[in-house]
Length: 465
Image (cartoon, rainbow, N blue to C red; front, side, top):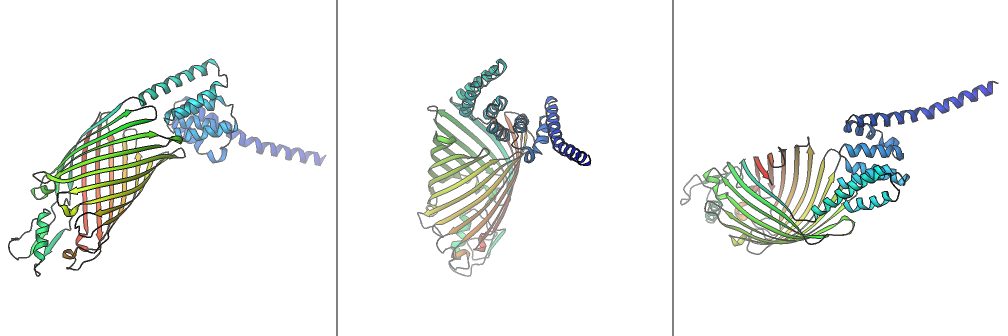
């Protein structure tokens, strides 16, 4: 008798231990469904997401996690949860219907069309058939828009402050104790630095950098012209004019005109390749004399990594010709960039290696340039965005030089440059964008003369059309 009672109590305890988590699980689902019914999609998603590690793999849980994630605007996470539900329950029509919606949001239209075929094979009821028809119409509309010409434009006006337009040290003092110091003085004057003494005399010359406010006007046009369903032409043109307020900095006034033509083609597995050619012309100074002519060509290969990341490989070559022939060089660059979308932010990681081949008598000769960069976009709301970028550059010249700037002893120059930028963007509507930003740059060089600090602030208003 006692044994039967003990067995009964043990059985009751075990049943309670099993049923209690099931009740809690069902209560979580009911609570999330109630929040969805009230329109509180974000809370419903947050509630289910908190228990994903515990309940992932249960088709019912994964289905509702996918539904709440989709309603909360997290299409990538929704797609992952819904695919888990379909993997364990292939005939789950609701999960397949929500998966179509997630694929459409992610612009994976061909995959969405294949999913619709799977749905139709399940003989959906009339309500589901009507929803499928709406998805088919939306997909057709998006594909037609995607296959038609597209145009985007930007006009902007910026005002800002630059602490060091010349990118020179705070102060340069030169005492002409050697005969060839005159060439150094003349070079600095040619660069736009004005001494406080009489350059025609062998007096000590002191050069100071000149901070200045500036104004910038810019315009950009991007056009897409389809060739067929898998290939298209891309055109990108940019014009920019920047003018400094202080007379001493106006030698660095700059005007740029740039154009790029690219041929883009879709490959298998959602990859794309683009072949591109570009041209740039630059003018500088108060008289806007020719500064630089550049021709370039390159290829970009993009492919997804998982559901949330995209990797871009870049290979470029450039032909650069300056007004001062001793600055001419040709270059080749290999780069890679990884863009990743997370729940609350987007990140960018960049790495580049570039080699410059000096074609004239350039001090230091050829140059090897390495870049490592990272960036974050953090949306504060639908209209506000914080953007941060940090770059580290290493520039190593391949030959000894720079003797006039290193106590007349030739040496190898190597610069380490840190650059940071913080921006706040506010989009008033589909047409107007306001951006406030601050930039800081610190350069440390093996030739101390080239150690510099620079910071800029900028306020920009842009019209998008």
